[in-house]
Image (cartoon, rainbow over all chains, first blue to last red):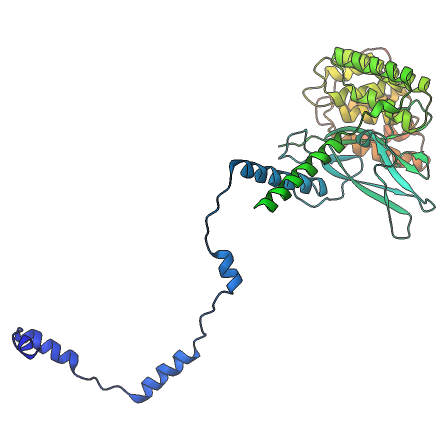
Length: 200
Length: 216
């Protein structure tokens, strides 16, 4: 080792000696450095469950299962669309006479959540009938709101002209806040609501 | 994996079931055979003529819901069919289903096909649905047919938009409820709608006559 060192160029030997020479360090500076390191927060370690979730892994899926999974995801989308508005926005109150369909959907799917309201303080049961529920008095029951006799219901309607009526304790009542439909031929008045087609 | 597959299959089956439920069973099955046959003949005729058949079916279902007799249901459905046919003759074959339905309603309150044709002649690509719905409503509320028709015509040719007609309807309805004469209420409120286009004379068709104070 010594022979090897001696055989080196004198300049290189000088550099090596300089590098080996101990450098005087201030003891207080060393203490400050250790103190600063202790003050640093310890690196957070991800919980084991999170680490397990983040861990990549390989799946093998037969084509049938993949197709079924895709159909299931579509089904979830459809069910969600039935529960709320078609575009995912919460149902909003709109004027009873005219509503606007959602522009990002084709007409066959676009629907506006219409809020129907009637004041019937003495009523025990109120429902909504119209061409959208085949005039079925049991299909769209209305809900009493508070003690003011206000009955409401939200109904998704496709763009177009719809005829409807309220059924208050078995009696057909037209909507006082909507245009009147021409004589129904059966001795009752109905109302008209127009859901406008979306304008892009 | 097998459990997941079962759940996915069940979800797909549920979705299919809901979709089928949405379509529902035969809605006319509650009609007696004779009434049903007559209604289905009308529906077939409407399909054959390219008319919207939804309003006819809806009228039959409305009759069922209101416990009307089979005869009344057939009469009402036939009236809707004829009104749709006449409405298309008046508005033209390019009219939308909603326009035809609204025009059929206007015919049923006594508006003439000539009056409808006058409105359609100044369509300029705009839909006639809202003006016709408002027109039928006004007549039903007691405005004279000629007054209602000529006022709506004046507004229509002066460029009034759907919102103008709906605003007019709301105002007139409020005035009528407050006790104002329906015709007076309409003429007063119509004057407050600013013209958006050049006014021209109302065509000299039978039954269409501009109100005196609308000429100003």
